[in-house]
Image (cartoon, rainbow, N blue to C red; front, side, top):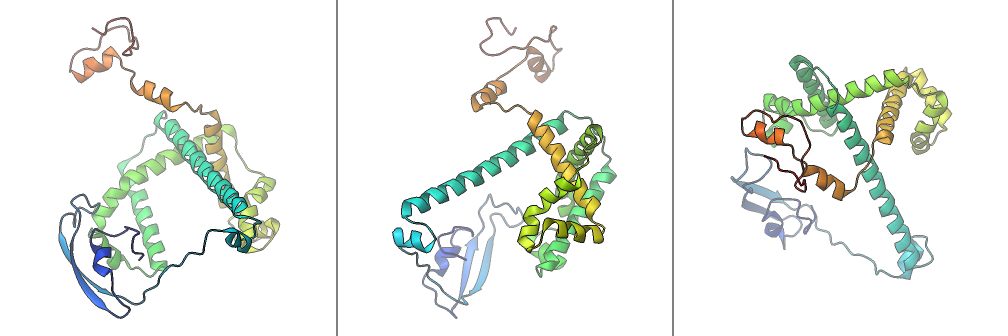
Length: 281
């Protein structure tokens, strides 16, 4: 842990200030009332802590020598490079969020019938996949359940919402892949595998042959087809400004008000906004 990072409950870091390597302390602390885990929210707990090692982070001076060590001619050049990298990272995040929002808009407009059994089965699959990942990190099912202060039925119930969202997204993507006849070529597969191949230190062609030998090419092709379908949705979506989005949230219809009041919707179906010169009554 890092003092000052504020990643733990209030009082934990303060209770370790001044501790030396090999020292043990007991911290009696209370979880915040709004703590995400409701089982422990507002409750008091006793933490037994043993300090294994203490380190102090020393940062080098922010000058041209630092820039030279990093491979740049000056501090200004280093700042410019870092700024460009941060901007590119932000743009990637924004683009990913836009694609996800466009997909969810398409899902909301689609008619998809899902059974409870299918949703529960997907939630179970997600849970088993999570356990498999935890086991690779040395965390057993029992340890995770104890740490999360929940039992398996609770976790499965919480996963059902994510499971339903995933199934609806997959249904829309599959429909678009089929309707548009999306089938990535080997050239497109090679392009998509380029970064992974570079990380493994092999050619994309060699990586593709490895996947083909393992019988995984169809899996990779389906994944790429799904990504291309999402790109198609995003390309068709029209972004609007924040001002337009805010104005759209203000849109109101007399029918909506009638329904909220339990009455009969007014006739006509005309859209009304607060600036409408006509009356809503």
